[in-house]
Structures are given as structure tokens and as C-alpha cells.
Amino acid sequence: MSFFGGGQAQPQGPDPMFAAQTEMEMYTDLFNKIARSCFQKCASTRHREPDISLGEMSCTDRCVAKYLESQERVGKILQKANESQAAQQQAMQDMQSAMGSR
Figure 1 (cartoon, rainbow, N blue to C red):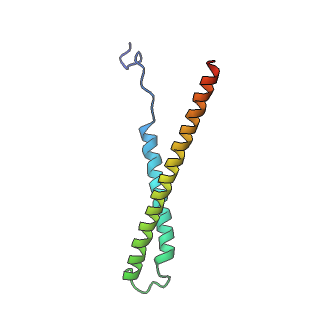
Figure 2: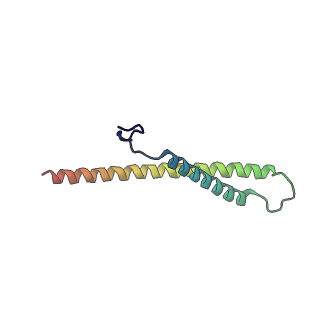
Figure 3: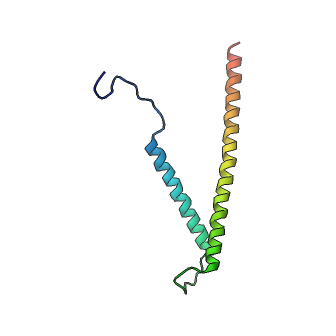
């Protein structure tokens, strides 16, 4: 066994840096999509005032809430679909192993 742990096997798993970077990219993409979509829907094209109006603020709040709610619903649907697909694959593997053991 070496000083640097060469004799011990390191457990292999997901790389936490890769996962953190991917998650950050996903949140950045989500933020950019929300900002682009809600700005186009809610911001006045005539910028006469330096601050946003009450109507623009209300519209933006509703837009962001709806966008996040829809993303959450889609995520739940996709999660259920993935679970269903995994169960189907497991059932197929179980059937194949049962057929092979005869």
C-alpha cells in the first residue's frame, strides 16, 4: 500500500463537481428563459419611466410563478414516466432471466 492510497480502491460514483456544474447550467438556462419570456410579455416597449410600473411588476410576478409551476408539473410528469419506464425495463429483465433459467 502506498502513501497516497494506491492500494485501496476508491468508490466510483457521480462526480460532485460535474453534478454541481450541470445543475448551475440548468438554473442559468431556466433563469434566462424566464427573463426573456416574461420581459417580452410584461415590459413596456416605451421606456418613459426609469422604474417599472405596478402593472409590469404584477405581470412579471404572475409570469414567473406560472413558469415555475409549469416547470414543476412537467418535472413530476417526466419523473413518473421515467419510473414507469424503469419498472417496465425491470419486468423485462425479470422475464428474460426467468426464461433463461429454465
